[in-house]
Image (cartoon, rainbow, N blue to C red; front, side, top):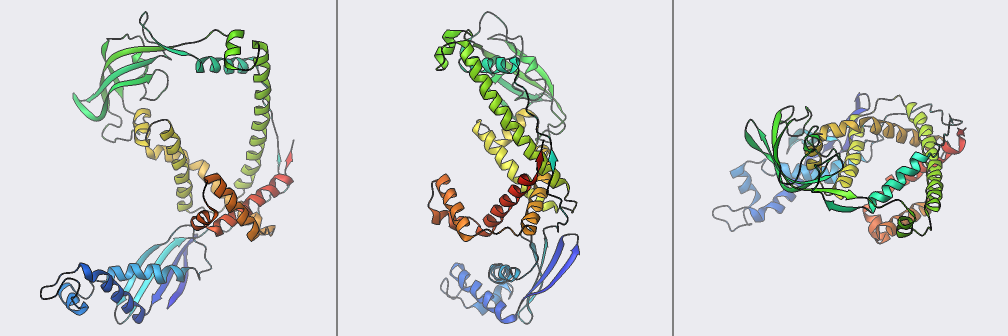
Length: 426
């Protein structure tokens, strides 16, 4: 009983056979009966008191097989897979190849393993570090940002709307003369030029005043999330309630004193330049580091299982969804307003995901070649850092964090230091 066969059936794809003997299967079936019997009512017996044989006679002897199989996967199949030397990158697909009281159960599992990585040249990688100069235009842009942050929002009555203004509007969308779901809103604040709506929408709202009612014609993008609207023309009826604009403060010494600890504009400009230079230095360091690791990742020529790419894309999508939510939207609303789709957003992350997956595989290889060792004390120290960061107890963090994965993370971090220390940055 246990893992009895391992076969490589394709590049990085494996098939495993796990056998469970008749005795163990019978116990699982009986355990499933015991768990379920309190919910079963049979004529002539009190609820929960019907014998197993009577239930199987009425519903068939296989009536407890499904629950028994699920129990065996948890109790027998998963532990058996731990004995395999093949490291899978995701839970395998499980199917039942054979089942019966006389034969027990034969499970077939199909999964993908990490690709084998060889011959990564990771020492002496040469890259160029370039620090972008700070221009007067950069400083002016930062000053302009400060003015916008201190701007007053005023209602505009003496002119028509223009890019940069905010319109408070009601809108209703129609396709073939019929209003469609999700296409209407009241008292919505739309900043013209924000590109939050589908192409052409905001541009047609320029030149309007409070009280105006008008229609705009748009065409939904071909990749629009709502497939019934993708590529289709639509008409939006717009009612303008208010036109709002930013009133910027004068850029003078009084403004500087109001927003900072500096006495005049020259001092503020000098401070902005200093911070810009520091940021440019940091950006140059980050770009050089990215270039180093890009060279490392590009050396990985192995075929990457699709499931590894999808997992990394999932991570990026979760991060992006969190950022969207911080702006007050959900992902579906964001896609509706921007004309994107979940699929297009995922595809936009594919190249980055492939680079990161390859880099991770390369760093694991380098850690092995360099015989990087991580002690239990180092793992414990990392757990304490995580506990402090999330304001949780160390025991709680330890209970939810896979320490094997954490140790591998720390090994890869050490490998990355080895690569960086050996690089030639000019």
